[in-house]
Image (tube, rainbow, N blue to C red):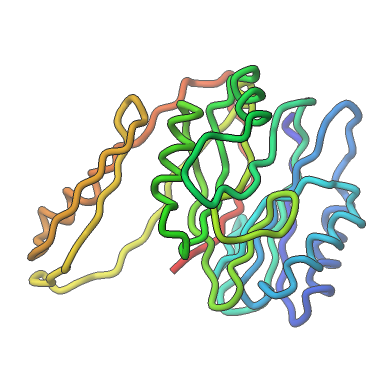
Length: 261
């Protein structure tokens, strides 16, 4: 299953950027007996072209399942693109029945019955999900997904100065969408985050912290007032790292990241 193909490019027009990526992906070896999944991240300069990009990728690669999001910036292994039209694509092979696309969830609630049944039968504990920041219920939706799976979710907020497009089979928006992986798929995760310096006496009107307990139930708290260096440390450490059961022979994969605000 360690068969990955990464391509990324920048330019002036969505089609020429797509074609440059496809030329790189043409070297990807097709192995029989595997199902392909495509991850695609698009800079917000191309947000309005998301449907055309996904349609072209389907035609040229023969891959029907594409998951991804728009971002204000894109990072691929050794490269970053910001404030310019760019696309990053990762293609991988999975054994049959190893993933299911998660259609857009616009409100808290149970997983669709077919997805829930598959998740139970395949012991799915991991999902890659993208959330529309305009949806005021995303914290509850994500907490509900994590609790339903009794698992671990990665990815983040869709970010754009234009359309907030996501892909999960079809181009979508307004909720949480992505892909769930079966329990026997080896996964390695890492956390990357950044910060901006603030004056020591800065005052925040309200802060909402969300962290996960060992039972994956969400704990939320709010506070307001003056922020000190110690308090910043408390905020940073309020969300402890989630541990996954070690998987045999974790597989290193090319990096593909998109950046929000």
